[in-house]
Image (cartoon, rainbow, N blue to C red; front, side, top):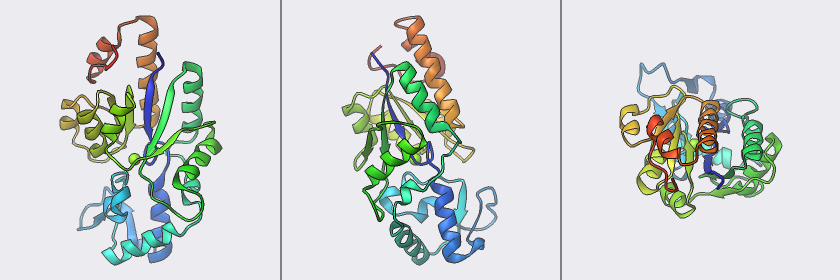
Length: 241
Ligand SMILES: [Mg+2]
């Protein structure tokens, strides 16, 4: 049975953060942002920047110094940009094509999960599909999430979910039997708490794909090995093992 994988977009495959920072600097000047490592003064995080429906997907590599009025103005500006979601770069160059090649070679079933809100132009779902196709993933299945990712992972009997926010990882780990891979690129993550829930932490999407291959290879070589692999990796026991 093929692995069923749920993959987040922003922060895992797509670099929403850089695009949002660029738009903020266009509106308010370059002093509005600085690297997250500089935490010497109070500041708003990226999570504060975006509206509630997308806040869970907001990466945390940068900090932006925005008032609530500026945040509203920025998001109104972004939502008016036609095909904004199609304009993003990849988090890691070539990562979508690599995922596509692996999925084709290993016959993985992948669904892309996102909380992207609407912008001008095509539906967020359609923009996301076009973006994935343009980066090398043909015929992508995209679902714009409006409810708990854990319930979705459970309902779709996903085997593995890849995400970049602790909240989503905890959601999946709590409400489904899917294993969770958290991609945390150096930002502060509650690592011990996440690991205790069986969530496996990696620092890049490339590393997450390596882990998927490792799991898949173990399954091929030794049927019934999934439980052992999961135990070795500190992940939850499989729903299907
Ligand atoms: Mg995300």
